[in-house]
Image (cartoon, rainbow, N blue to C red; front, side, top):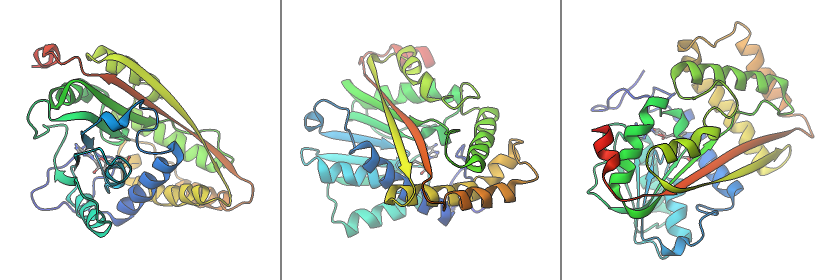
Length: 295
Ligand SMILES: C[S@@+](CC[C@H](N)C(=O)[O-])C[C@H]1O[C@@H](n2cnc3c(N)ncnc32)[C@H](O)[C@@H]1O
């Protein structure tokens, strides 16, 4: 395990924060998913009304940079992440692309967000299921409500686990991931939709109003750029996640065989794989009941 000096251990599935494979995977996945969803905030009625956005667990910063690039009305986009390694890459990307109005800061969102009250119009969080345990949601949502302005939007996007891909080996790997994620506390139920089907309830329970959801039924196909990206994602993910699977008791003896079989099956012509994502969002009521409740 190699931690950056000054960094605390985290709840992230990949403990080694300077893991290059994970950085490359997050970078690829971030771009692939934003493209597949049709942009940074495709379901929002009027993103041009937003001025200040916070992206929590921003990883390599692609979403934040794309938000600033495609929404010229934004005055400030801040990406925060616990990994200094990810943030260094994010800053370099922003500089190379001449992205203005984007900044990145190192922060453990499960401890605190170092911003004054009501600093942002929208809080975005995508793929937090890799670091948020079910019992972390109340405090985290309370902190989102504190840094979001009254009437602002809190927006969460999470993914299902696919057990219906063309590749039986990939389906088995995903099943292992469900079991380990549930054991580790990241899923509410040990099911493919163990996080996505709970999002609206969790947001409502913890004080957000006008909660809505949008489901993204993505399809990945052999021989397409998105299909190639998914293959690269699988190639890296099921290597970097091995210590996590071992720790939470989901590492079968034939893991190596399964891993290589999945990659072979994803080289076959004609394969397809669905991937369902859910975005849930709600309005910040702007009173302090949430803070009092969790104080
Ligand atoms: C799967 S990546 C998602 C990146 C990006 N949001 C996206 O959609 O592509 C999860 C990110 O959360 C970060 N993370 C993990 N624990 C965190 C914490 N406690 N506070 C802030 N970020 C955290 C990880 O370092 C990683 O970059």
